Amino acid sequence: MEVKVLDEHFGKQTVNLNLIQKLQLKVLGHAYLFHPPKNGWKGKLPFYIVKCKKHNILFIDYPHGFPPNQYFNCPLCLKEMTEKFKGEHEENRRGRSA
Image 1 (cartoon, one colour):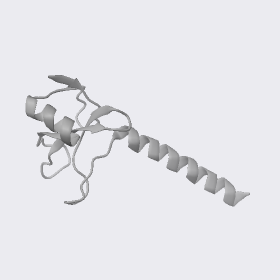
Image 2 (cartoon, rainbow, N blue to C red; image 1 turned 180 degrees about the vertical axis):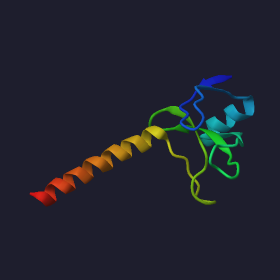
Image 3 (cartoon, rainbow, N blue to C red; image 1 turned 120 degrees about the vertical axis):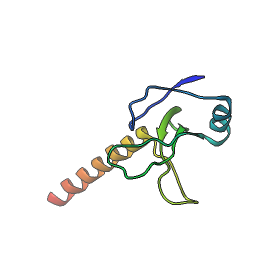
C-alpha cells in the first residue's frame, strides 16, 4: 500500500508499506522502513514512518535520544514550537528594552 509522507530527510513523497508495517503503524504509531546512508553521517540509522497524532500526518524520522527514552520529531510540531519560541523570545527582548 502506498501512503503519502512528509519527509525532510530524503525528499520522498510516498512510501510503500507492507502488511506488517501497516499493522505496526496502526498499533505502535511507527514502523521500521530502512537503514539508509546519509551524507555527512559516519554510520547508518534506522528510519521509521511515524504518525503524528496532533497533525494526523505520516512522516519519516529516526529515533532521537537514548533507549529506553527515544522519540520522533514531527516536522510540523517542531515548526510550531520554533515559531512559539521565537515569538516569546521577541516579547522578552521588547520587554527588556522598554
